[in-house]
Length: 69
Image 1 (cartoon, helix red, strand yellow):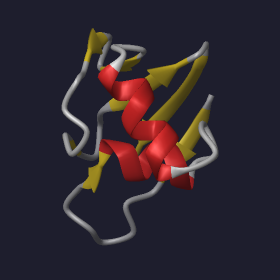
Image 2: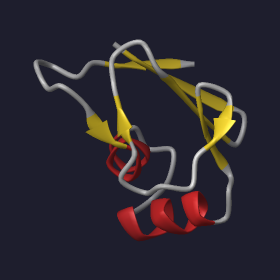
Image 3: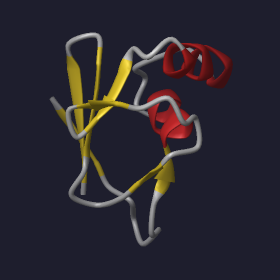
Image 4: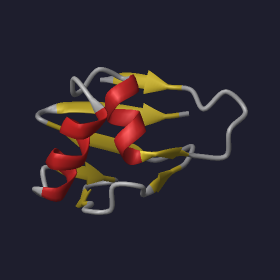
């Protein structure tokens, strides 16, 4: 499990979060994984690539979890 700080931003797009945290290798790969229904936000499968992830939410992919703070 890792934390990701928004650093003053209101939100981060889901595909960007996956790329920045290293859960996937590229933005293109992130989009594919989201399309395939392999990514969860707050325990629910999320298929919107640009889903706005805000402080207090968590993202799960391939057994890894990122808490957005």
